[in-house]
Each structure stands twice: as structure tokens, then as C-alpha cells.
Image (cartoon, rainbow, N blue to C red):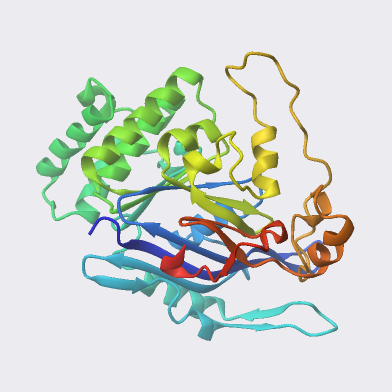
Length: 376
């Protein structure tokens, strides 16, 4: 049912082992996110902030030994809710001691077996993804069309080859790859970047997924192809009704496609709300980091030129436990009477409007809220 939760993420934590430092680094800590059925939710933030790690956690594609994911991810399907991290906590032990901020031991084979059970019938069918470089998702030794046919026969009720072949041609035409019969016989290296991205979209949607994750789907494409791919994605979502979780650095794209946006910084979400309001130039409340992102983007049409405002300072180290607001070392507001609180107390989420929450001590006059699951 449209408007009901489709994907709920609660207290997501992801860690990776850094062999050079001989310790674990936090990629994502305490992320709460809810994607509603039929909507487009965008994740924004600078590189390394945790956007792709969050998406890959929902797909069960995080690799690393011992890479760790903890928390709760619930996918609501027509057959009922699926807990995608169920049982993984039995395969890992996480300890914090004064001597070592983070000590982790993991039963790798048991972890892999449990994760495989959790994602049976989910990945590719219920959740699918398109990535920045579509060529890495194709087998270079098989024709594009044959890979689409294989995906259809694996994830849909269609099992006969001829029926799957006809559907593959239909989807190639649907995404604008014509003549479809000729494109069917192309190998991935024989397609341009834009054509390969369209072929990836055809293969993904041919399995009729309910939730599509698009991780920077237009990166590396020229402006014309970028516009065409975005228009195609928006049209297909309107016609097919799938849910879209999009990751992008382009705020113009986010304004155009997304109804809601979540802002990531240093492994946490600092703000979430309606995209048109949050990413506009008006004076509604914004997290200082969100405002910094807006200040740093070029203005396409402006009565007078302005200089871009660079964000000073560096992102805090992901090693060890974080104290206070993650953005405080770079925030111009974290000084004076606010300095001590910003540096030593992690801010909760404050409700600044009915569907807009942000984590910043500047808004202590607003109502404090606990953002979990459907409250997001």
C-alpha cells in the first residue's frame, strides 16, 4: 500500500578493519531511516559519509573480513516483513574496553551462511540496484541480452527462454535501446556509457523489483545523457510504481526527483525532511552542514555572480568513539556558549516542522524527538 513503510533501518552500524592502523573504523553508526512505499528518498553528503554503505547493507553486499553490520533492517514485502540482519548478531562479538576502543571477533563462515538465508528471494527481486559504473555489474563475456534473459528467468515466473527473450527485447525498447534485437547481441564493452547504463536499467527492471537503489546512476555521463537517464528513471517510476532510494552528489538532481532527503555526515544522519524545502535558498531551519552544501554548489542562473563558499577543516577520524557533534570541528556556530556542548554532547533530533528533523544544538527550542523506523 502506497504511503506505508517499505524499508526500515534502525540503529545501523557498520565497521571495517583498517590493517594499516590495526583497528576498526566506523563507516556508519546509529543510522535510522525509513523509506515509504512508492516514494523517492535521496541520500546526500560528501564522499565517505556512509551513503553507499547504508545502501549496500540493505542489499547484503558489504564485503570485508571482518566487515561488520549490526542493527535492524526490515523490508516489507507482499508476503510480510523480512528481517535482513536476523541472526547475524550470533556470529559476531563486539567489545569496547579502555585499552582498545573497539574489539571485534567474527565467525565468517557462519555469517555468510546466515546472510545468504536472510536474502533468499530478496536481492534482485524485492530489492535491485544500479551503480555508478554499470560495466562492473555485467559479465563481460556474455551478451547483454542473454544476461537480461537470465535475470528474468531467475527472478520472475517466466521460465521459458522464448518468453524471457521477448521480455528482454521489450525492456531494451522501453529504455530506449533500439533496435532492440541488435542491442541484445552487444557485449558490454560494445556499448557507450549511456547505453550501458540504459541496459543496466533494463536488466534491473526486467525482474520487476519493488525497491530500486540507484547509487550515483548518472556519474560520468555528459549533461545530455544525464538528463535523458533521469527523465527515463522518473517516467518508469511513475508508470511502474516502484520505490526509489537514490544516492547523489548533485543537489539539482535531488530536487528534481526526490520527495524527501536525508543528509549524511561522518557516518550519521544530521538532517532529514522534504527535499524542496531543505534544498531551497529560503530561510527555513537547516543544519549548518546542509547549508554548507548549498553554499558550495554552483548557481546555474543568478542575477549576479557569487563566489563559492568552501567548507573549512577536515572530517573527523573514523577511528575510535566519537564525542559530541560530528560537525562541530568545522562548524562556525560551535563557538562561545555553544562550544562545550557541541564538542562533548551528541545532539538529538529536533522537530522543526511536521516532517522535518535535524540534529543540532542550535534548535534546542524545538521539540526533541526520537527518530526510529516509521518516525523518520
